[in-house]
Image (tube, rainbow, N blue to C red; front, side, top):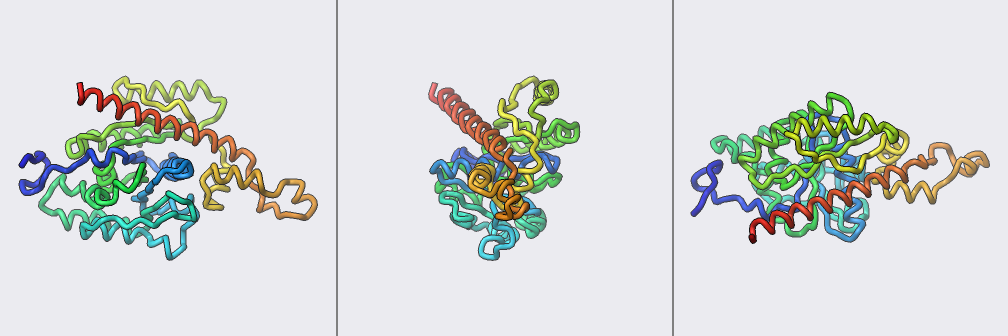
Length: 321
């Protein structure tokens, strides 16, 4: 039997090719849009009729805030299901149609996720890098049920980042225009390079600029040049840019809705005139700019799917040549 050099002698080669529809979203820095991209891309694709899974490998469990299930005991287990699956080597058990959204399933994160590095290395104490495939092994039995799987990766936690990269085929790195975001990108890029020894199918799908000013063209070009420099000259920035819009971002988290849902709610909701007439409270108003952010995210989602399909086709043509 053929084995990979990073596995134990008694372990067969891991079938990474069965996880080619898994996308990790990660950066070594927090607050750069990882969760927002994860939940909104997933919800948009599911709204289009696909079967999509989100895995929240984050102790903050912010996917629950974006999708409105935080604190709901029938859904929000604080990451216990995720931790138990990895700890005991059992398949993940997603929550189906989260928030009444057909086709969108979730494996929630939360405070329990902090225990994962300890359990992971207890279980694989003598396995070295093999331990980083623990999430991949729990995902594999259910992966074929989905058209797309997105994993929200935590910042500043190398063991958990390695778990995520061990299970993914693709990595999207969201960044802001500041130097700290760039350092975070460099950190996750280091883990990416290291994890390719364990997961040789891992590829960088692209870098997404998040919370940028709509008129800051010079800054965008500077970020693009800096990113290309950090990636050895490769221009992997997505053309779509997610604009900075504080009010709709706050509304989205407060209401537990992805931006395309928020856009509809804003169009059908009360107006400033309704507040003036006493027909609604000011707190019920939704920022009108939510539609612009929704359009940015939809454009990015289309670009992500198109680039992924093109790279898969390119790989297939090389293999069959």
